[in-house]
Length: 372
Image (cartoon, rainbow, N blue to C red; front, side, top):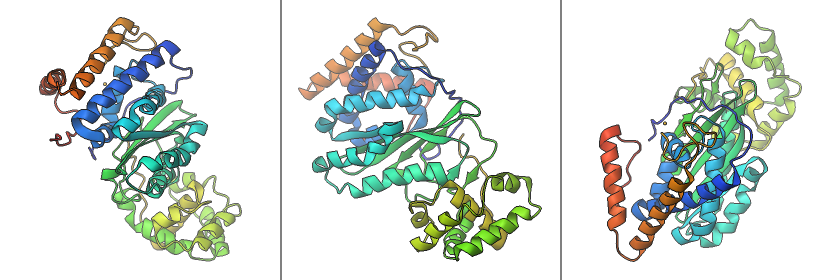
């Protein structure tokens, strides 16, 4: 799953899912989550949500437009509503959302903490760092506006967040999985989907390791020294990419950012990234100074690299078939109810169908081990 990156056009679309469709999306999401949790545990649910291709297929299955940015926000909203009803039963919760809702993530994690087997602090930290990486350490022209955080009783988590580029009217979606993250600063994503970006500063690329070591060293230098060096860099004849990256950096205005970095006494790049007040422009300035002064390269590689069951919201390829949609919900609901009574024949039939589909289309996502 770590290699599941790719490109997909996600145009920014306005509007909302109609109430009648969103209500059905919530009901169908609930049954899907219950079936997956029963078959593969909450770790299996999180693994699938972290797979950008699987998630895209889920959004289509729920009846949203495959090529719309709204698939992300609406599918995550439906999952969050569904988990309000059954999350405690299976030990899986959702926090965050679009815009102002994303800022409630720490509070919503804290609200679930009495039901967890772990302390909530690391979950809050993971939420904050994933947002900081995708908004400051990976500068690809997309402004994060949606942050959904899914977590289970054991402290495993996955993040689905989305950014927008108003100039191109396109969106990009970022997926994270806790099992995949060994270092927030080095190749941490489970996958990224979206259109290719022309200009990227990728401080979490493996090849940016040298500049990640140089940045904390520079941050320990007096702010005025950094301001002077940055001003000198702006007057030098630089490669085109540097001219573009330096174009909107005002050394005098960055002094307060450099002061925050200096006072943080961060020991490494991750510590500096977590420092309040150190954002995209400050990291960009330090990265470019690291390359210019120390000769350590910085990566400009862009890390970003689907099927209908019920129709689509906008009538593509055909309007949502409400009767078929409701029948699907009933089938899944009956299967999970029978499984809870020890009668698993219907779930076994669904599994056989999925296996048959896999022989036709190939594997869509990593299969977690079956539960005994």
